[in-house]
Image (cartoon, rainbow over all chains, first blue to last red; front, top):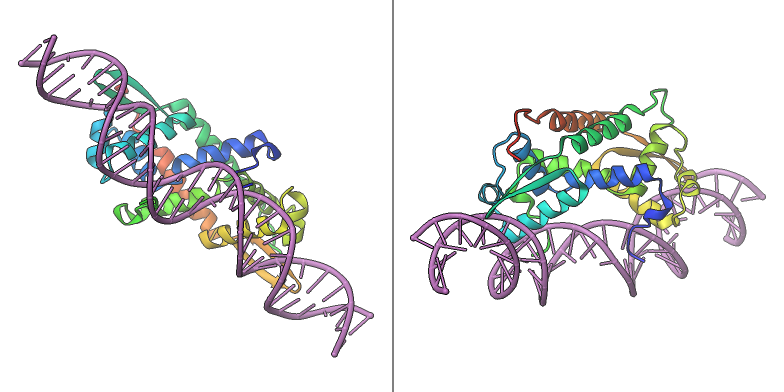
Length: 109
Length: 109
DNA sequence: ATTTATAATCGTAATATTACGATAAATTTT
DNA sequence: AAAATTTATCGTAATATTACGATTATAAAT
C-alpha cells in the first residue's frame, strides 16, 4: 500500500483531485499566477522569477503539463508556456460546482 | 532538501496551496462532498460510505481539520463533522480570485 | 466495575513529492 | 564545425503522503 486507490473513486472525484494538485504547491501557484498575468511565459523567465533551481521549475512545469492546465510551444531554444484556457475553465467549473454544493440548513454540529 | 520551501512564497500562495490540498486527494473530495450534502456527518458513517479503513479516513479527517475546512464536535462516543463555512468561503473566494486573474489577450503561444 | 461502541493515535510499509546538481538534447549563433 | 543558449531529463537524497492493523482513549451502558 501507500499509493492512492484511484480506482475506488469516481472519475469526477479523481479529476477534481488532479486539478487541485495543480494548485497544491506554492511554487505551482506562483507559476500559474505568472502565466495568468502574462508576466512571464518563457521557461527561463519563470526560473528567474522564482528562487528555485531550473531543474525544479522544469519539474513543476512538467506536472502542470501532465494535468493539462498549461501547454508549451517551442521557440528554439526557448519554450513558451501558457495557460490552457479550456482546462482552466474546466477547473473553474468543477471547483465552482463543488463550492456551490453545500446545503445550508441547520448543521448537526 | 525534499520539503517545500514555504518561506520563499507569499502567505497567499501558501494558503492557496494548503486549501488546494483539501481537494487534492479523491478520498478527501469524497468526504467533503458527503459533508457538503449532509449525507453523512458522524465519522463512522463516513467510514461506511468509503472503502477505506477507519484509520485512513480518520487521518484524512485530521488533515481536513488541520487545514480548517472542517470542524468536529464530540457527541460521545461519536464525533460529528461538518464543513466550516467561513473557511469554505475563504477557499471559494481565493480560488475564484485565481480563476478570474487570467488576462485574456492574444497569448504568446 | 465491566463491557460496549466509537474514534484517535501509533507503528510501519510502500509509494510519491520536492529539490538540486549534473548531464544531455536541440537549435542558434558565431 | 564549434560555441553558446536554453530546456528536459537523469540520478539521488530528504521528506511527505497514503494506507492499514493494532492499540489506546473516552464515555455510555450494563
